[in-house]
Amino acid sequence: MKTSTPMTVRFTAGLAATLLASTALATAASAENWDMPVAYPSDNYHTENAQIFVDAVKECSGGDLDITLHAGGSLFKGDEIKRAVQVGEAQIGERLLSAHANENAVFGYDSVPFLATSFEASDRLRDAAKPTLDKVLGEQNMTPLYSVPWPPQGLYFAKEINSVADMEGIKFRAYNAATARVAELAGMVPTQIEAAELKQALATGVVAAFISSGSTGVDEKAWEDLTHFYDAKAWLPRNTVFVNNDALASLSDASRTCLMDEAVKAGERGSATAAKLSDGFVQQLADGGMTIAEPGDTLAADLEKIGATMTDEWLASAGDDGKAIVDAYKR
Ligand code: PCA
Image 1 (cartoon, rainbow, N blue to C red):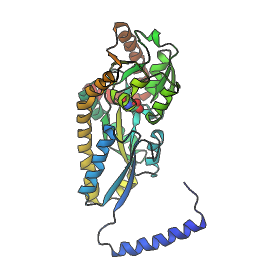
Image 2 (image 1 turned 90 degrees about the horizontal axis):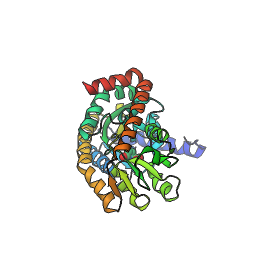
Image 3 (image 1 turned 180 degrees about the vertical axis):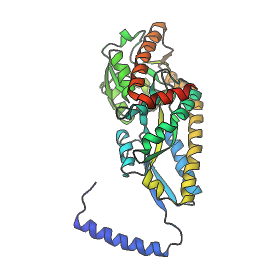
Image 4 (image 1 turned 180 degrees about the horizontal axis):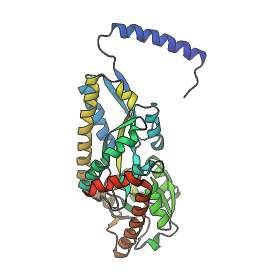
């Protein structure tokens, strides 16, 4: 928060008087202008989907709810977005909730290795987690609106990798607690880096490997820095769009209904788009010159073991909420 100088106080008072006068003249509720920070580039399908969402909301609210999308961490960096929406510095935002699993393990529900490894399974897991996420975000004065999966997570390296032993000591970019834990258990050295800073980190040798989707590999032009992509399909993390509850309450009923309806559509459209684009991303990695492979038998078995350890750890830290999610998912 900026401190108000006397000048801004006077200006704000003047502005308030003007607004009061114009509100008295207006017949309907005045238009709401919201900011929506997102962490990923404007040409990433998550951001394009969010742009379609905000355009549709403007349309169905008759211009009463006008949301400005801020891509690439330009308004708030990825790791600031959740807090910004919670405290109302932004009204709505999109975030990889699993990056906040250190705060509450349930935010990492979508990054439990090998629990849900297809788009269909990811959507079922989302449904299973919905009551818990509604509750946990609700306690933070936020409402989740929709979420969209990233394609399955694979491993990017600068050399051929046949087992976890081959990873020893490699500097590894993590994007959440789960990815940092994979690195630790594999004997690598994790550093948490937002996607917006990943290219720089690869180019300068701060990291030499990471786990992510083909989508992010394409965004980063991973073939310029790395050589191998192992399509491990470890999990499909999701970006979640959530809104500040005070902002939501300030809307007219019609605008709120329009926002909620478009959110349902955005979730469905986003999941379908991710599934449709997924194979093409991996193809683009190949076209860029990367070697694409399934993990070999030894590597697959090593990853399976790391996954089992991480699943136990997650269930222990997520407690009853975590168990409720997994039980609902397996039902
Ligand atoms: N891309 C995001 C998160 C998962 C993914 O596929 C990233 O690497 O930051």
